[in-house]
Length: 99
Image 1 (cartoon, one colour):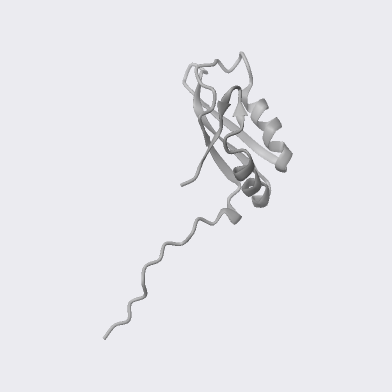
Image 2 (cartoon, helix red, strand yellow):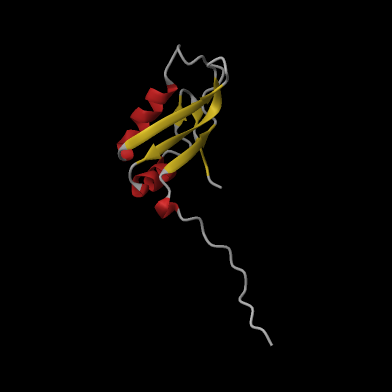
């Protein structure tokens, strides 16, 4: 006779995450024309120290609409993930990707 515990998925541990994956960012805009990274850093810095901002681009330097923001403090990332969802960045509602 074997006792098997039920398989219960563990909740995503947002308390330890410091990087937010972003989508629905402005795309088809060349990197030298406007710095989307600066716009994101400015907006997300309201929640805590931002250590890195990455906006994905093509080989030609055109934004493709995805990126990430990394915070020093996980609590800042958690707060930003809730408060920045849907906020317009260059006239597009920001999406925080939750896996």
